[in-house]
Length: 280
Image (tube, rainbow, N blue to C red; front, side, top):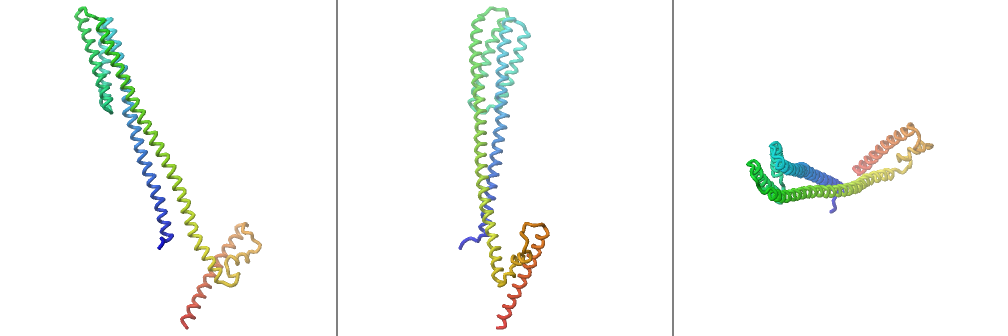
């Protein structure tokens, strides 16, 4: 036995509603994921890139003021170098607190080791300078330059890692947004098509009983004048149906009156047939 049309319409409507809710939930979840990823990219990766730039500037300033101190032997240059050294330590600590992978952690560890080696060499020179002792300045300079180049190379490598991580997250956001857009478009098309089909289905299911009712009323009466629609045409023979409001109002009034008359006649005939059947 087939499913009644009423329940088929209900099931179809529930299916469209379920599809719409599922699409909305997916969009909400996807947008939440995109928001968290974007926030992580801004709060984490971008801050690490900024700290890396501050770390690089602090280390270059250390190297510059260490050379000035060795050349001038003035204490104010040494104090300025100590300030930049503290800045370097602060940026390094901030980067360690935000590091997101073992590769970044290893790079930070190597940078810290090169920084310590550089200052070990520099502190030895400072000790010779303050003691007014002669030492192989060129050898120390060459060793410090090697350490500086290694540290600078590792800092650039760290920058590349951070930028690569940020780029990967941005590409992930772009892919997720593209997928969500495609699903949203597809869902909109499907829901629109299904809604249109079910609207036509509902219209047909409503129009069919009304058509049958009209045919039944016309069949029950022999005289054409008994039909409400014919009565309207007879009462308004010159009207085209596109006139002013008053003829239209008269038509509607006549239609209602004729419909009520037809209904009463039908009830009377039904009662008469029922009474005759009972007498028999």
